[in-house]
Length: 482
Image (cartoon, rainbow, N blue to C red; front, side, top):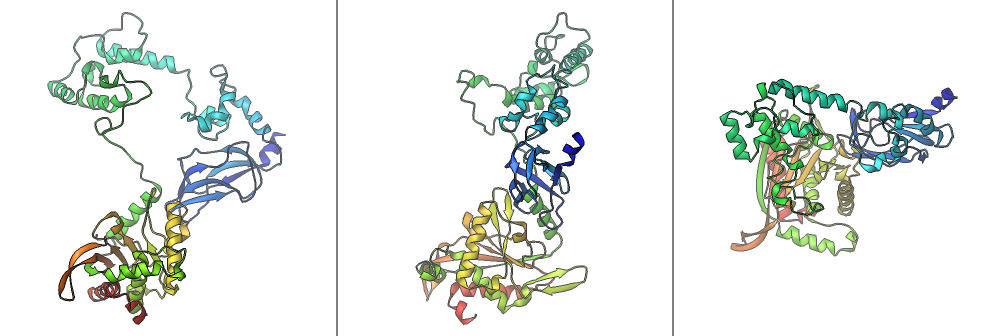
């Protein structure tokens, strides 16, 4: 019977949802053990080095185990979920696992009843979705070793202080905080000064130095642990109102570098130290472009579409590329060739909670202005929802990054790997400008074009940037130069 049950269990492995990706992080589980799933049903969301992707299960059955909790990075090809496809109910699988979990039953009789709550209760020792047998044998901390740990703490104090405590210690932590030997904690003058400057009471510091001496590291460790204890200034405050976090209570925050951020960092470093970057700048009067934006918003051809300056900037860049096609190229190091692309996959840098991503509009050169507006709107909304697919971020040829939305005038953008140019658009704001021989307030912005100097020389790069600026200054060139 056991053989038949095991034979009916299918393991769904982490797939390669991009091109050559080696790992992905599980962001969220949509199912739990005991749930019934059908072929094509989304069971979890994962984040790769390129995007967040929902994974569908490829068969029908009952979820038996979730092998990893949310937040775990899993290698491609590793089983992440077990599904019983034998057609039985969900009850037999957990029941079969209970005897294995019952081995430490004397320690924790309530374990079988509590296990289903683990996924939502926030209990750290139990992994989300793990069966009772697996988590109890591999993950759950056991209570048995607590006594030896306390004895070890007493033995360490005996060795440091030169004698054993005269009476049993009801609170080992208190014994560690206040050595039983000398009344004054052992510490060198520089360490005492450090403790005084940081507001640390040396009697509360656990010494790790030889002969029970408190070291600088011990003082810093006490400072790091301080937020876990109530501070005297808020001791009288109600327990339900915790002290707010600040730079005084939390000196540092560490954020794991993974997923999109890790991939972005690697790509930027690789690009910066592979392609020789050159950046050129131009400041341009875009007053007429801003007027055209307002006119297009009222045009019925753009009803329901998002019309903004970025739309016309994108169109201007596409026209400039058509006039200077060799800027739309890539460098083939292996073949020692410049590959000129006869299509434009226009990348748009988008800031998301998971980091910077650059999805691109496929064959943007062939789209009309309304079609381009529609594609831009879909790209932005998909990126904000965190649903951009890896395919949408592959194959880009040139990119636009709009730093102006943050009030920044301009920048020196780094090329996306494999691309030849990237255009940075600064903030559009009123400035005094000489117009028709008079100084008037005009809408002005600064453009910056970075390009790979191996395949784009100064003349070509300057022509492209000048063309974009000329179109934005006189948007009728979108027609005359088309």
